[in-house]
Image 1 (tube, rainbow over the protein chains, first blue to last red):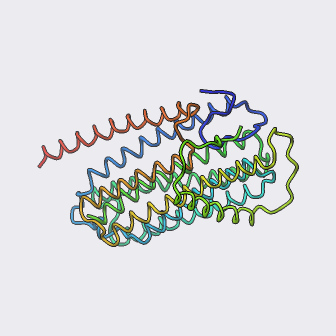
Image 2 (cartoon, chains in turn purple, brown; image 1 turned 60 degrees about the vertical axis):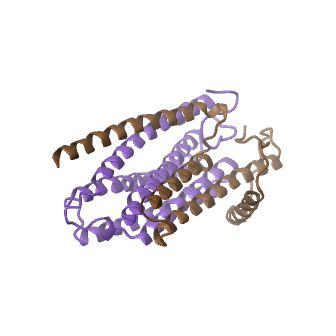
Length: 208
Length: 152
């Protein structure tokens, strides 16, 4: 698994101070294993959703409830937040001051919160239209899948806040760097799950 | 100690080069505007300043290219549905194929997964997880559709 270079996935941070590259590798690899378990969770929620698409029972179905505009907006917001997180990773790797790192983390946080705001508004609209989670099998499956992703994004936003506090308290030391790498993995993973959501849920629902 | 080898295995196409140039220019301009300020001197890491700058530019270009590609793939998927460029099952197939390509773009550009030997273990983990997911999702679908048939 290792040569002399740090061999874990992600930006190879140059000259890590206290941690050996092997430690960083294990820390990152372990987090990958967690992400894969999370991927299994999402995959099964998708599978259940797939079996429930037709179970609308006369309640509002996908054609009535899914709107392309908000879905596209949320997609672009989340994709841009992945980019800005990547820019924060580059700042972490190359820039000596912590300013741009904190700036890009802040932008990512704002975009994540914007995404959550849009999504919550969508859910509120659906419930207002009578498309509540307990109304039909399709709606139950939808509200099991998409809010689970939303909760993950919310947890990621809380994590960003925690990292900002840690940067303020400890500075950008070895542990903070490792944690930021893990947060990056988590954030990009959530965007990949969202690709599946907007394809399988929203676009498939509107195509009918 | 930096992430990428400087040599390329194949000559990039002209369009890709142009795309990278535009992406790099935009991102360099943006980051330069944001990250102005005094820089502490480098502590003799065994790299010259220009090597670091080149490595940084490569990383920036990677993210920029990934972003633009993902945005384009998203746009095409939404366009197929919005303006009816295809219909029915074919449209769905196109949307899923675009999603798969975009996932690969994310893995490659944002998560830096490639076929390099040092990343083999991570790639193997991904492939194994995919296998597990296929087994579990496939089994779920088989059981539930069988159940539905029996209950109708």
